[in-house]
Length: 289
Length: 93
Image (cartoon, rainbow over all chains, first blue to last red; front, side, top):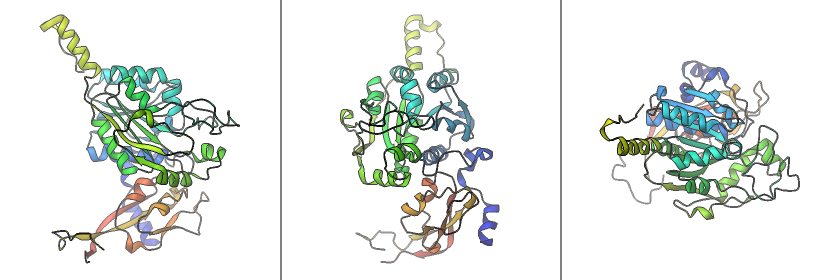
């Protein structure tokens, strides 16, 4: 015991350089998958050897919205659903900054749904990490646009009867250049996917399936977050380049994970510069921040 | 350790050894590290931390191979391992 205490004084956790330690321990429930996802992002940033001054993390509202407060890089906690518009402005003003939107399914896809599809259409050079826990967790477990059919929630006590969004299909059909989905358990593959997404030019989208023990698991009687992790272990099917029409998530069914889309395509700023060059010729000074 | 084919540099390989560091007061007792440690090094302790959770404790610390899985999976940044070079075993079949 005394040896361990001594070592703790000498050494610090390797992720502490990317975390605001005055705010840790965080407020998330035990067995929540968000801390694991943050570790993956911090490991990705660490392994890519990025300059911390050139990274910005933007979050919206919700459990995942608190990520911006915990990451020790330039970060901003926006209003509900408006994380992508803020990130777009940041990305246009400072094109060399790696802008990472880290938010939840309710924030990005429900309230910010229109921003999401239009930013994917314009192929803005940002990375969007959507942590999908199938529910509005912070507000008490209401139905989200990703809640699977028949899953119970606070506002659907007899089971959800609305068809959920298929997020990879939505992102890919809107025009994203990179689309992947992993669970919080596939931690190394998730880190690799985040590295690829951050270095990708254009709109990259990574969906992370994360356990919500306090609301989703409790309301559906699925046990704890650890039981959900075991479920991901037994029921995830890795299919790179799968047909996105088949990657729907049904209640407690197989989860198809993998890298679905990885294409090269001109970004918003490249299209803007190319078009203005075509119209104005040599008089036009290309915009690069 | 069993190989399906013998690596060419088998005499240079060493089994890495890790030293576990558990920050008990930060732990929320989720048990991810205990469940997914490939070597079964950890178990939940009988003691409580000041928040009332059972932090993990190393029952076979000498078996840790510094795979970092507990560090990556921990949602509370409460466990990590550091590679220690001394005392690493040679790979034998």
